[in-house]
Image (cartoon, rainbow, N blue to C red; front, side, top):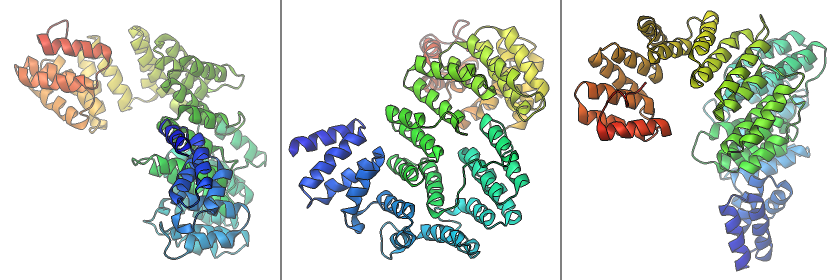
Length: 524
């Protein structure tokens, strides 16, 4: 047993949750008197997505010893089997720790919906606005009202849900659109699908043809799965990585055909350093799924992070070579080339993205972003005239966009080109976005280039306070301080910049710290 325990701990240490769970489960079976071993087996089984093992172990433990995710897994299992009364008893039993009673109104409301009981609208309102599920109430209320064929009442809640959905926006749009379609309200369903991307475009076409898009939330278990996924995303902002992964796994079990759970789970696993598990999760999303673009984006980023550049490029190229490739596919290809520092090829891909956008369709408003990306890549490739032309095209589309004004103004400064116009652009960008540290840095650098050193230092100090980790700001501040004769402060600023500087910049900053500022070491 000692050897098996050591092996289980070793598997745990390297992130092999599946093997660790199996080993701990074997140990728990051999020594049922030790609940801590069973609990480790249960935690590992949920983390690995081994639901048969997780359910077996969970049912063998006293309810008071079950973790939050284990109890939710049992609730999900009851709901999948139609055992709503048992699920509610598990959620609402007094004295349970942790207290899951806040989930009760969600399950009760959808049980009422299934029975045609309009009281579901009142029940969903019992969820505390400041509780863990408060943020999901507009979404759930809209879905419930639509399911009760009250789509006009549902619309304002649906709009609020979309506006606050964040990274879940595409998924929320799809589920609300399906809810309105099922209610016989095709116009409102189509409104929910406004936006860019092939997935939404395909969904619009299906709804327009009177077809289902298969994203309906219409049962207690599907509602539970959707909320658990949202909670996993919200909790991921905290330090604990284990709980968001567990909640995403439970959501995946509760609603296996919700491919968003595979994407979210993969992102969480990748963040936790479980690259292979993450890639396996992304790969489960079918090529014809509405969220396939998001899944491909996530796979490519994960592969690049793992230094598997060729594999990432193969996926990006394949998508961009497909007959139905769109601007999203070309932007992904450009991002991949850019990550590989193949700047010229990245620029070509970004320009192909612009060409793939409808001239007057929903994609036209995004063209300036692709032009900016192309310009940035061309600048990195040393092709400044072409870069300037690309960004100037972007400016014709979005003349008051701070990012464009800042990029073009700063680039002109770097190339010593039309300094008056460069400063004017950066000042306008700063007025539009005064709290942006990067733009404030550009303004400070423009002042420095104009010889207004004291004003430049004050502006650069403001930028450094706004983003102390940005090495470029620290280097600029150091150069300005050194020029003003404040040599000790300059070296302090340079040393701070050195902490996050990349190789090329680090070498230049080290030379300044050792030798002082000169023409060869000045920031560009």
